[in-house]
Length: 104
Image 1 (cartoon, rainbow, N blue to C red):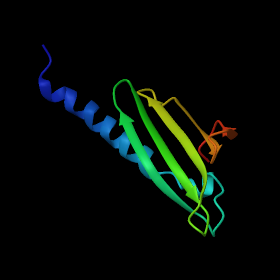
Image 2: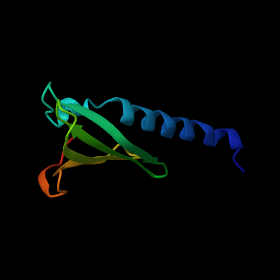
Image 3: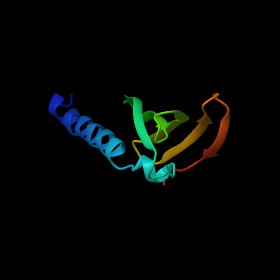
Image 4: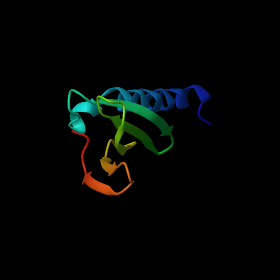
C-alpha cells in the first residue's frame, strides 16, 4: 500500500499547471484588440482531473463604452502535457465572425 503523501506531488503539479494556464496569455494581443478599445474578463472557469481545462469569456468595448464583440476561449492540457486550445469571436449580435485553433 502506497503512503498517502505520494499523491500530493501529482496534485501540486495539477495546481501549478492550472496557475500557468491562466497567467500565460495576453488576450488583448491574441484577439488583436485596438488600443482604443478595452477587454473585460466576464468569466473564467477551470476544471481539474486527468485533463486540466481553462475556459475564458471576454467582452470587447469601444472607446464610447459600446459592446463590440464577445470572445470565448479555452485551453486543455493533459497529464502528458499534450494540449488543445482555441478561441472564437462573436459580434454584438452573437454571430461568429472569427475562429482560431491557437492562443497566440
